[in-house]
Length: 570
Image 1 (cartoon, rainbow, N blue to C red):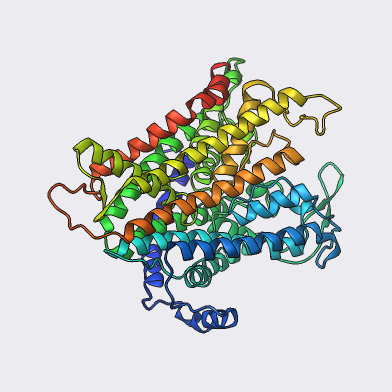
Image 2: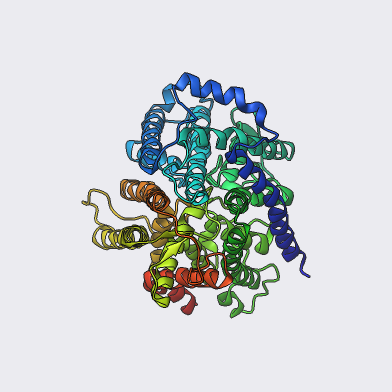
């Protein structure tokens, strides 16, 4: 077997092997059972005491969401203030300037919502203080917010009838102290020992082979790189992200970072089975998500290893595959694998430039974000998949002529409407945003008198359309990767994607938590011979089919205008 493919297979198998016991551990943490991290109890109680929080008090779904949204709003203003004033604060050895209001608006929202869409270059756009106390801070709390949402879903599924989805602040705190922080420390140590910088020194001057003197940025990067992957955040200490040799020094760290970004999303699936004591249900979800991932990964790796057909027509041999925009340290296979992992997991970090991918590979990356439910981000992947489950339950009920039921609770019009609205919202934000960008570009492409001339496209035609479509897809999916031929640091993109970011993050969390809160309060109906079995392979296939149909109906036209047309034109 090709050694590049062997590396990909080993990386995925290693991820699953680690994720299974981690899932069991996560279930024990939130079930209140004894774990190896119980030594954190005094620290957690200290936080609750100084905050005036009663961690033992349960919350219904409205109280849970109110707590989540209120604290996130506070973090948004905190981050925005620091970004606008970073040049006047401490820890700025390279003298980086303040962010502009529109860029600060976009950046604060982006990291708050676990997207980390960067319209700036990490080493020049931020100071060490804002990297640590804004970016790193938000990477922890945004990931913990997603995990808390998933655990609320677990609590609603665990009990026959309940109004208690758990205490948001208790779950949130444990997500950091028991899961995110320990895993990040392990990954940061591995990265630091492999060459990622972990100091507060400013730029270092080196002389290149050409004799040029270049300033190389450094800083305490290893810790940020760890949580950006563990928390499925993305972003990058350096502008080149994980293709930068200091952020991803070698093939081993490439494997570590791939495992790190997948491990919690997969572990949360296993945790669901252990927590609600329905392991078969969790295995079915895991199987469907894995099949979906393979449908995206296998052709992508094949296309990237095969190279460009346009270059083949010139008679040029591409023995290493399509290597434009890729690192020779990793190769085409590992880069293709990363490109799909980072888009289905909603991490958004990159070890190659997606803008240089083959057209259909770019389409697969887009599909991973458009579906946004094959593993997904920390916690939110399960919440997104739950929306598809509710729709599948409703359609399944119609097919057999029964009132739809899910785990002993009737799924009625209110729950289905919420699920439908969440699904339709994504399509509206992505396609509406792309249409607005295309219209603005046509109207103000090179008009010097416009408020802001639209000169952001370096690639005209179908690929330029793909760049704009990808940007809104990434923002809505809270992903953060981009087709970086797009010039996105301007008022139009900072403001429009900022609103898409915040709506695309919180409404898909609000919807599933509201649904499970409404379902969990209903009278429990014991299973009968006519009950739809949601832990069966048949139901898993039905849900998978619903995902494919909804995605195709919603997004086939823009995919034809973008990557498919580009491919046909090669």
